[in-house]
Every structure is written in structure tokens, then in C-alpha cells.
Image 1: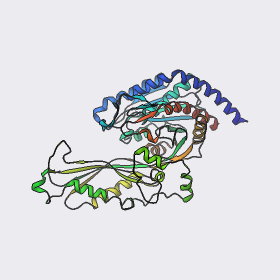
Image 2: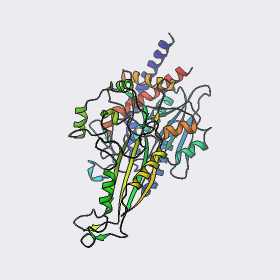
Image 3: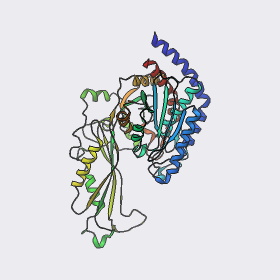
Image 4: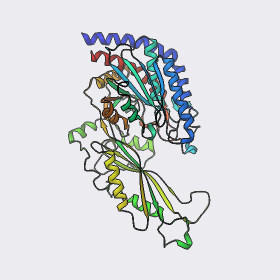
Length: 469
């Protein structure tokens, strides 16, 4: 009887909210495009002013939506935008996390339209940051506005929107530690993940960790003429390629000693349950124009991208790469290498294992330098919590079917950090798709997904407040 009453109340709220969304959707879309136009690339210092401009934009939008005590909180790096609406201390509190910084747009020549000039076509917004994470983060601000304007805010809410996620959230931990009381909440709500498909909703229940570093190989003290010195001096690019090639064996198993020692192995029953998620291998290959898939022997494609650790080269350079010819043996060669981690791997331990291994496989003809850039811990979020159940019901209401819990292949290091620093679990309500090309040219976010997120997020508040009673 009580459940029927809750459902009846929520259906009434849904009708009112749907009307508001229909009236203001074009404005919502125009606003998120204005945000996307700001090239807030955190990893490139030449964009520093733009990153700060994006923070001010978020601040102003939170104020306009109805938040109180909105401030741009300075850190040792880029600022964190904080705002809140505390309506009743007896109600649960939701802390919304998102980020306003984005990845670099390179390589620019592969974009079909300028990356910071949003293009709307075929039901998508095409632009850097459209999905990761400006589009998804902005859904929360518009959902908050919607709840304020329709008098349907069911929980207290706090916002913490940062500008350093794409460079490892280097100052977020210190901010959380220094502001534990201010950030006190019952759950952290994040939309920086995806779902299986628009007709197959899912909730991310686990994420991989990350260990990211740069390696440098040096041989001669300057670039050398390849005719005069070739064959007598080690070529750093050749050596680096050989070293990288040795990091995987013939079964695509990572050869770093001790790398798998703490990897959590799923049972056959758990793997069978994962395999129930809809997946079309032929469609997957066609979408990526792949002749075939590739990965660790003994595991499926879905397992390789979720429950297994990886090691990948993200960039490699050295020597002459300009137009025409320049016959040199370079002094140095570089690569950026990332490792995705699974429970119970620890990023610092993996970084140390990799560093020792990489140094050990270098020939005596070169010098090796390994620099750790950033990292984060893998996490599995509880699927039996009140917050997860509230998210599940919210998706079920708007999509008409129960969402599937799934392990995500990406990394959001702050989820584990939030648990450690604030002792708060997170719920990952993502609305992006794997095909949204995040971190790649022609990134996009579906108009359907943007709207469906704004429709679904307020229902999380309603169900969470009802289930917490």
C-alpha cells in the first residue's frame, strides 16, 4: 500500500516535471552549448584562463538555478565550485560531483567540426566535453533547477564541481579533507560514466583504477648524424620500442613481475552473470572498423574491458617527425603509459612494480627515467544500498525497464578517495554511451541522453528520500 502511494505521488511529480522540461529544453541545450564553448583544457596551462572562466560559468548557473552559498573555492590548482540547498535537516543529503575541465582536442585535423563549437546533428551534440563531463554534469544543474521551480526537491543537495579531473584531481583530496563538515552527505551522486544502450539502461557498479606515467630513454647527449654514428650508438626510439614490446607476452599477458599478484579473480558464476549483458561482437567490430578484437587470452571482450587489468601506450615520440627527411639518431625517446587496475591492485604499488621492471629491462647503452603522473584506486560500489535501489527505481521509471549493474572499464579515482576521505559511498548514474568518443575526435552526447538524464535524476531524489524514511 505504501509503495503504491509512493508511485502515485511520483507519477504526479513526473507529469509536472515533464511539462517544465518541454517548456525549457531549448534553453537547457543552449546553456550547455555555451559551457562547452569554453575550452577548459586543464592539462595545458595555455588554457588556464578558460578553465577559470568555466568555473565562473558554473557558479553563475548554480546561483540562477537556486543554490545558496555558491562559491568558487581556490585550491593549489584549479578551483572547485561549491553550492548547496539545505531545505530540511531531517531529510537526506545528496552531494553531486562533476567536473568542468576537458581533455585536449588533438588531433584537430580529425574533427569534422571545430571541437569547441558545438554542432548539433543527427540527434547529438558534437564537441569536446559534450559527454565527458560537461553535458552529464550540467544535467544535474538543470535537474536541480527543475526541482526548485516545480517545488519538488525531496532532499538537501550540495554541489562540488572540480576543474582537475582530467589531470588526476590532484587537489580534490586535500579539499575534501579540509571540508569534511561542509561536504557531509548521505550519498555522492556522479554522472561521469555510461550505460549499455539507450534502450538498455545500466548502472556502473565498479570502476578500474589507474597508474599513469611517462618514460624517457636517453642515449647520446645530442641528436646524431645517422650515417656517422648509426650502428655504433643505441637509438633510443629503437630501444624504447623493444622495451614496450616486451611488456606483453604472446597471450597478451602483462609481463611486469608481480603485476597480477593482487588481482581479484571472479568466480565462474560471477563471470556467467556478467555474460548476460547484451553484447554483439560483430556490431562492436563494425562500429570500430576492426578486423578482429585483441586482448588477454581466456577472457571475453566485456571481461577485458572491465574485470581485467591492462597496460597501454597512450603516446610515443622522439626524433624528427616533421615534413621531409632528417637523418638523425635522436638523443631521447618518450612514451606515456597507462595501466588500468582492478580490485585489489593498489596504484602506488603498481607504479613501483612497473618502474623497477622497466628499469631492469633496459640495456646498459641507455639511461631510463620513469615519472609517475597520476593514479587512482579501483572501486566496487554496493548494489544493495538504499542509494543504489533509488537509482534503480529512477531508471526503471523513465526507461520502463530495470537497469543492469555493470563494471566500467574507465577510472574515476575520486570514488575511492571519497570513501576514504569522507566515508561516503557513490552512485554512478551515467547516461553516456561507449560510442560517444570521449577523449577522441568528434566526441558527442545524445540529445535523448541529455534530456533523459534531466528526467531521471530528480526521481533519484524522490526515491532516495522515500526509501530513507
